[in-house]
Length: 572
Image 1 (cartoon, one colour):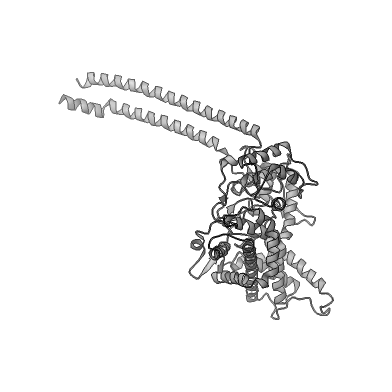
Image 2 (tube, helix red, strand yellow):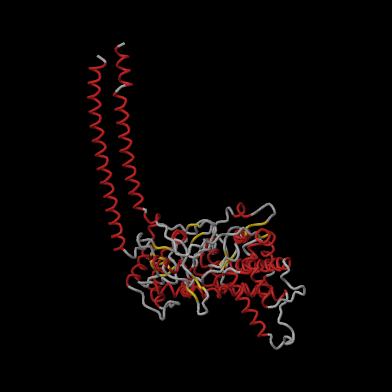
């Protein structure tokens, strides 16, 4: 009975409340320590907490489309080019000539042919060089292409069409690889697919405008009508009028920037055509265009838009270089955000810097080596998706990659996948670019870094590796983008040195050990500051823990004392 009474006193009396206070004190102590540790972690990862935005709040990241292409169209294009190469003889010769130097320089597999990755790189680069457009969806791994690409009707997403064409080649070659002719044929097929798709959408635009009564019945189109057709044609690349007809009517009155640019280009092409035919056209008849001439005009607009819009890219490059305080291809983000809208001599907007910091980070256009002072990488920014005229899910028009010309010259002279530093130094020292008035000799630091790359690779420098790509960025900061480790954007595009090169897994496994330290002193300073911050938080955590333990021990002694007094007075 005495035991039960003591147990009840112990359970329900002073001891219980003291135990509760003791547990609460320990939980509070652990919570404080956890919060301090979280604060230290957050301070170490400060760059991810910055979310600066430009002063243009209406900007939105470019989205993606889900347009489809018939599987039979892919097979038809493949058979047409492979079985009737004579009809595409000129296109194949042009593409082979553009690919020749790079093909010889790219590493080959055991069969003496290009791997899938190398072929994708070569085709993408060469189409950009010859036709000035970017092919999207040409990725290194076709493993899931069929799973993610097709629907019940036998159609495939346009972004998966290049992968499936590439897979057709691999099937025919039994996985041995790609020859120069194979790569050239794939390039011709993809370009033909772009042109066929453009014509298909043109007829869709004609049907849409005819439905709204916006076309003459005699199908003789004046220049203003022709521009409206081009507007609708460009709009229908990314929209469907059945569900967005109100938006179509709005944009026909107030065209988007891409619609306006294509309209200007089409007007320029049409007027040039009229001038060339001034002696053969009837001067007493209105200047009109037939459906066949409109089809020709659409194809010419696709061919010419790459160079047409690259003028804006060059203007933007000059503008950003003027802002660069160190002339190293980097502009402080705050300075970029302070810039007004850039306009041409006629007062029309050319460009504006409106992307958020989060978006710039996601596309690899930010240098956050110093987290408190982020900088825009000029070459990466220029090649980013925000500066592209997104025509379809299959292709887009972006700023031309000037680094391809630099590397192409190296490939042409070297003629192999690697070269020794004593060959590359004089060669690269004599190369000029649009940002250079004349060739300049390489700095001693760059020469040393090139030698360091060769030491890691048996005395030669691989021309298509990350290290040399990074070296080129420091040697030609306005032409060659910084090669970030490959990642994907929300639409599934692989973010590489050229934004739209892939759709699947990384084409190269690059590790942190391959990063060249071009700013050792700054790196040491940055590490030291971070170390000081971490030590400070650790000391605060230790002090907090000590205080909590001391309070807990004091309360424990008080509990023991209360227990003894309670037992004597109440439970004796």
